Amino acid sequence: MHNEGESPREATAPDPAPSSSGLLTEIGQLGRAVKRLFGAQLHLLAAELGLARSAVSWMLLAGLAATVAGVGFGLTVLGLIGVLLASWLGSWIWALLVLAVLQVLFLAGAILMFRRCMHWMSLPATRGEWHAMVRDTLRKAEDEVEAEAHIEPEHRP
Image 1 (cartoon, rainbow, N blue to C red):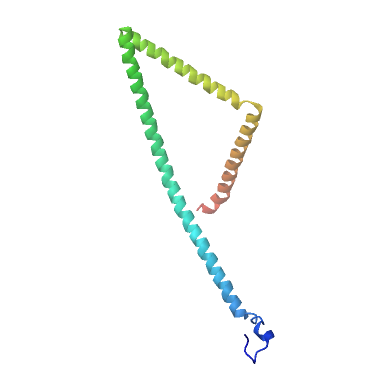
Image 2: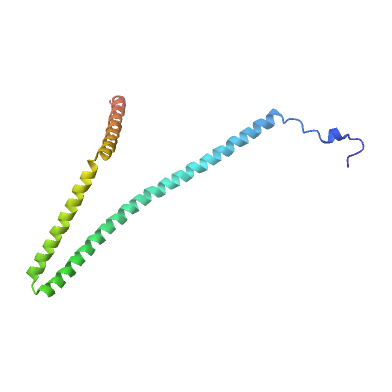
């Protein structure tokens, strides 16, 4: 197994400790690898932020298109209901009057729902959360004003 001139202790002896220049080389390689890793992460983050900005624009456009389509659909349904009411009642005036009453009832329901939501906002737990949110917003606004006040004298001619 072993060469005849070699003792078993010499064959299993560990390699001598790496020199300090080898250690420095490895540390340098580790630094470059970390730099590449974080550089790739920053590049990925920049790409994701670009996509997010694009997505926000498309989301706003889609929301606008959905609103326009919803209003168009609602007007179409109201027109069809008006035609059906006119043929059922035999008079356009009565059909339009019934449609107006339906719209007033719908508006009253929406107002009652809004008032109910405002009541929920006035409940003690919700009120505490609401006040905390307003205080945080005001504090952030005051901090921004103070920051601008400190920057402003430096930029004055």
